[in-house]
Length: 147
Image 1 (cartoon, rainbow, N blue to C red):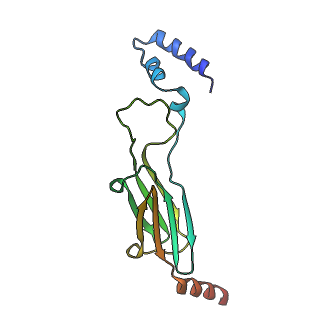
Image 2: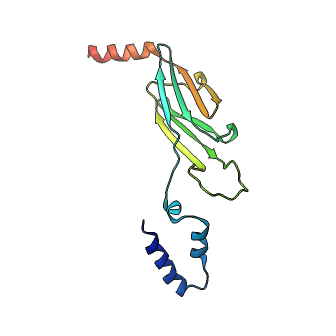
Image 3: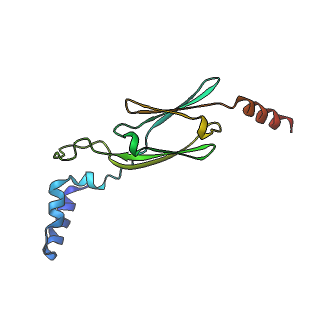
């Protein structure tokens, strides 16, 4: 992004406007921060052992009250919430973290049932586990091969 072209554009637009709105905006934020469109989606890992599936989301700064989990289908999980700034009233000098609402839908490797999901939040990590349905997996594979 060419900052000088933006400044020139602002100078021209301010000649025709009666306010200095854009100039004030640029003084408060860097232009590249304004156009940077970050939409936060929490990163996650999925693990399995013989009996359980484990999903671990990174959700730093999200409190339990603003977090929502919804099993859309037995193979899709939606996580949403709000990340609030830590120091709301302080002047921001540099900001690399993203704040605001987020939402992510992931596909689960095996079917899940909400009543069997165990959820825990610890040190900015959301940990979800649910039992694997081994019998169903073996049945589906055997059924597929026999046809």
